[in-house]
Image 1: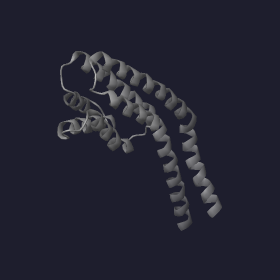
Image 2: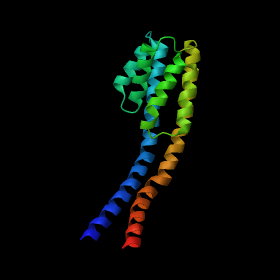
Image 3: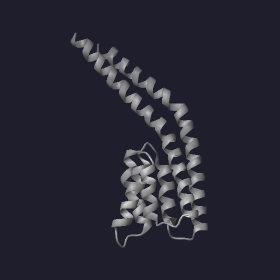
Image 4: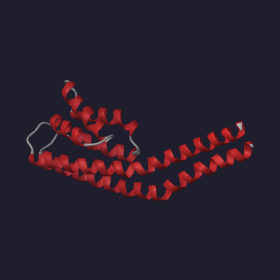
Length: 172
């Protein structure tokens, strides 16, 4: 009886690890699409709105889901509370603080950090160009994420289950 319980626990835990890794592959393209949508709203706000950047970030934080919500909420908080700190530094701190909670990879982080370097330091037309460039880069990364998802998601689930079965067979 104890062997059966042990074998079941090994199989369940290795399967859970496989499913968790597969979930991260599925979440990455969704989170990139969410960022793309948010950048479109940001583009509209900068083009037609007359609000400050911290107000725009607060509005985006209210309307978005995690983890993008955390990015804009933290950026708004940084912009409001950190006196003497550049907009770039506020943005970078927000990206760094929310990054561990995402399924995104380093290329997306680099796009966001690069975008932050130009945030709030130029006129509207220039801001639009930078937002467009960030959107193009994110769309490229979304394509890569979809390819990785198609390639690895099912494999990770299967490997989790099969690794558990292998361990159970080897132990018992």
